[in-house]
Length: 437
Image (cartoon, rainbow, N blue to C red; front, side):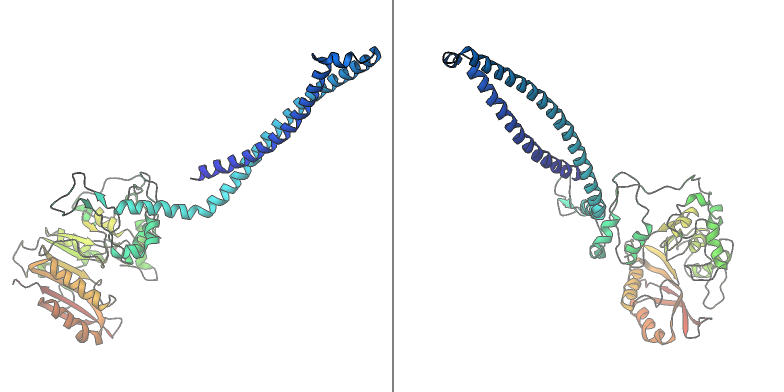
């Protein structure tokens, strides 16, 4: 589109310049024509009319004048040739100036419109991604339509400008490094994203992962990660966070040889439940598949994997490669937020676990929807392990106990304790069961 505007502007300027040159050329041609007519009159077939009435002296005078005129015409022709040469040179100079001027204007215009063009490209790709797309074989009774729409979260339409930016990329090229933008969209409720037609950047010098079962407790190599989006640029930096002041998501959880190694091994009869004691509440081998909500670096799933239980871990990459380390450990990550409906069918999972994530930071109504979704995906007799849910003391019996009772779980274990560093904050650890009928 920029090239077409440039060509049109250049064509208009050249046309105006051409009209000006044609007008000057007409004037010069008129002078030449007048002189030629004069020569014709005095030397052509009717020249005898003048010769018959003039004396030889007059004829010589006229001949001298004609010779003079002829010389003047030759000089004029020479001058015209020189002018023509100069006009060609001027024309080339004007063309060069016009091209340079147009390029300068294009640069300014492109600089001003760059963001708008990018958004336009992103908007077009967004519309194309979402469809609708016509089915190649026409109407499908199974779908009940002859076209198909690709999903996008309802909030995505409210965040149209940011989503359009997310969809601005070179088709078939490398995807932008926009992990922060993508996660911000997720946290604002824009899930799921539309698919994109670009390739994510790959880690440099990638090596094959450590085989199971060693991978469960081995820190992956730094070359397994694209670190651009994170403050830390190595796993050692993430491990060292435990010694630094400040607040981080699971400050110690990247150190697989530290506190992670002892989690869920011991059951203290209070807030800390042991995995073996929880599994013992069901018949051996009947807890097989489950979900860990907000499972940090996947240690709960690793402990369950050692007991032949497959756990899918949902997590975000909040300034750390949480999904990557889970996968490097040989486990299954799922990159979704707590806002999204769990992507499992009704009555399918044997166990759902959540530690710290489901707590009073979530608005009450939203939390109730989440808890009902937990109930939905659990099979009859399935276990819900609510691990260290925290709230204010005033909220326990007023809000959360009635809410859990409304959901309809049966309590198998229930413990309430005080958070050590804050006396007015309570912890709840509960093992609940979905009723069989």
